Image 1 (spheres, rainbow, N blue to C red):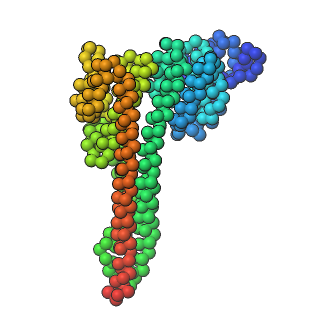
Image 2 (image 1 turned 90 degrees about the horizontal axis):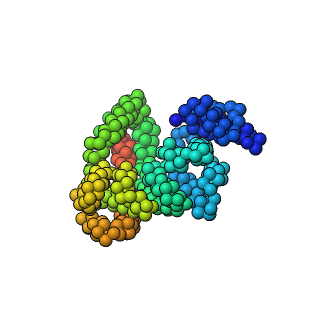
Image 3 (image 1 turned 120 degrees about the horizontal axis):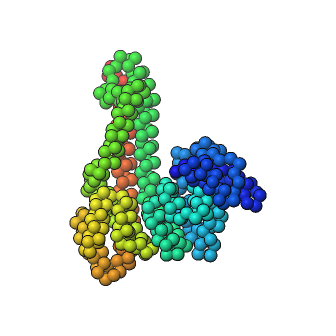
Length: 405
């Protein structure tokens, strides 16, 4: 549904601006008149001044940290007894991101007109995922919206901590790889061609390894580089299209889980995410079948998604959920047994929380070990590549100095 930026005179006689969602500009004006707001101009957001300023951030997304902070503050305000619309108005003024601010303004305006807060959030899936919306729906129905926001904020902070640990572990290897690539490009495009040119003038034949480096230099400094880049982009595009298919996603995730070093880490992250998400949804009051439906959408692994769908079908049929999880190949038998025990004892939520915490602690250890193992491997590989290039550079010089021409 289109969104319109309006300039108007409010009921108090003061000038007002904002965003409203409606089927047309006429419907937008009519909606504002119901709220005793007399419009002076109504424009689609895409062409308004607010929309043009938003172009600066069109290629970026609002940070997860900003959304988490908004959620935490909104939960605090609601638990303090402040009304939802008033809390949204206060927090909207603090938001610096133009696009996110427009979204919150529209959500607030729609809630003011009597629309459900959950329905208003659904139109902004870029900011609020299916877990967020499902938990808000429960909070809105049960009248515990403030507690729902606090639970969501804690869940988001926990998930961001795990993601930041993985990202932090990857920073050093990525910097080393970038440095290695830059050194290779400089040596092959600047240093080797000049040395080869000087030696060729003496009438000496270049060594085989130096000639190969010259071929690499030729590719990097000519139109052939465009061919290589185009071919690389084409392969990536085809691969990504295939990965979006159900078959491609299944094969990709099955391959990733079978990797010797990274497979266990990926498996632990998938299972930890499943356990943490399901525990949070159940604690918020969402039914088991609905919780499993939400978890299946955000699990991030095709094998796990299939297992969760099967578990949901078994729940609807009155059976247990541990069996399909055990048969998925993602969850270890011991963890599946813990899920079964928690299900039978009526403490599945606590058991899932315990599983998630244990796996997160284990994941930290695996990340540290992988980081310690990957860094020297990258350093050795970088030294080997640069050493080969240096050898191809120095060899012809040594042959000239030794009189081999």
